[in-house]
Image 1 (cartoon, rainbow, N blue to C red):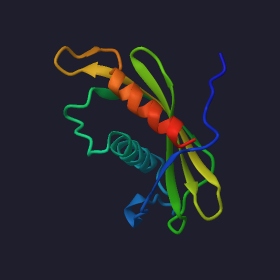
Image 2: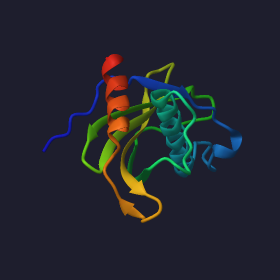
Image 3: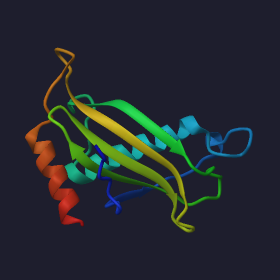
Image 4: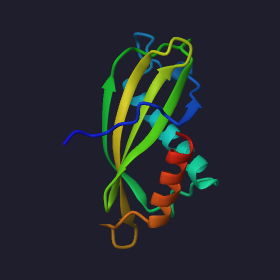
Length: 144
């Protein structure tokens, strides 16, 4: 089955690159880029839910991440993290993000991730809340 991934990202947030993010080749370390995606994910949910995310009570957890490093990120690049959720299952959702240089338009890294509903008390997968699905769907559709 071919996945439908959005051609247009509706949410973006600027990323501040720091000297400590760099590897010996003066590129942003691949592991650090995961932090950029985490930041973009958190900011996306804050925008969708209109409030800061309390990760101690939110019942979504990251269960899969897949990154494609397309081009090195350097200290003077002007990077944004773009985020979109494009598919819901019963107990999971699929998100796609990219780090892109906002001046050149060059896509530097693409991240596909899966988040699952999770009950912290039982430590079991649970269905994604309908409220989450509705808010995310409204956000994604209103901004198209």
